[in-house]
View 1 (tube, rainbow, N blue to C red):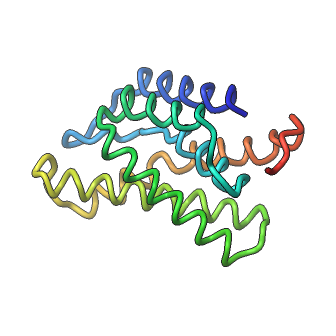
View 2: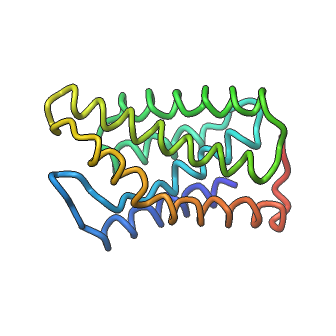
Length: 158
């Protein structure tokens, strides 16, 4: 499972380096493959007590986001959201897709609002919607692959 997490981080970095399309200082095609893996990890496990998982989040924050505190806050927010959804809904494929979509929307919206709050970006709803929905297809595709490949690799729930 840890190898899959670091593979997600490597794919994130590769796609980010290959796509440098920006619009008003906003990267338009931002893959969240590591976030999708983390959502899947939260979805599978009841308790998070793996040091490799925390190392993955630390590497993601240092390499991709460049802000450790922001990443920890946002990933904690995603953890609480996934935990809430998992408690309120049944485990199914559609629930997992809903979890991915809402997690990306929460992560992107919170990140965008923090950038607006510190006057790095100008508030524009169009930019927020464009950023969220532009890379949603890639991230959903990766989530679907994870959903079907984990049982094949026989990585069970803990």
